[in-house]
Length: 190
Ligand code: 5GP
Image 1: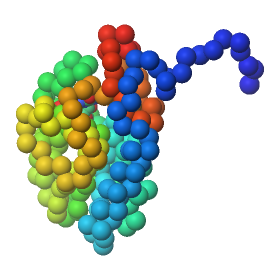
Image 2: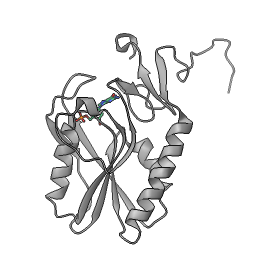
Image 3: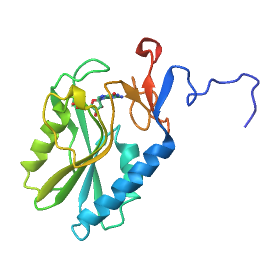
Image 4: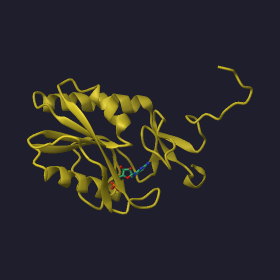
C-alpha cells in the first residue's frame, strides 16, 4: 500500500473521549462472567441471543469464555427517540430464525438504560414458551431505570454518562473502540 505524508487522526486517542473501562478491565470481567455462565448452564445447551448491533462485540468475547455446548442467534430491535435517549416505543426489526420453546435463553445486551427495550424483549421471549429467559448485560445505568429489569450476569454498573465504544455507537461511530469511553461533547462527535 502506498504511504501518504498526510497523518489521519487516531480514533482510539480521540480527545473527545475519556476512557471509562479499559480493554483489560472489559476482558478480565468477561472471562469471569463466562466462567459463571459455564457453571450455570452446563448440560443445558443454552441459546444465546445477541441484540444487534451493539452487543456483537460483547457476545463474541463472552462466547469464547463459555466452555459448554451452546448456540447463538441475533435479533434487531429499534427503539425510537433522540440519538442519546430511548422513547420506549420498541419494534422487532429482525426476529429469530428458530423456535425457542423449551430452550434455555440467555439474552446478551450491551447496556441497560431505562430498561424499556429489555423489558419488552424479555417478556416477548418468555411468551414464546422458553424454559428459562435470563439476561447478560455488559453495562448497567441503574439511575436511569424506568422499568424493572433483572440482570442475571452484569459486567459493570456505570453512572449516567452517554458512553461509546466496544459496540456502542454515537450516530454509528465509535463501535470499533476496544474500550468503553464517555463522549465528552456529543455536539461535535459524529
Ligand atoms: P433502554 O431501553 O434500556 O433505555 O435502552 C437500551 C438501548 O439504548 C441500548 O441497547 C443502547 O442501544 C441505547 N443506549 C442507552 N444508553 C446508551 C449509552 O450510554 N450509549 C450508547 N451508545 N447507547 C446507549
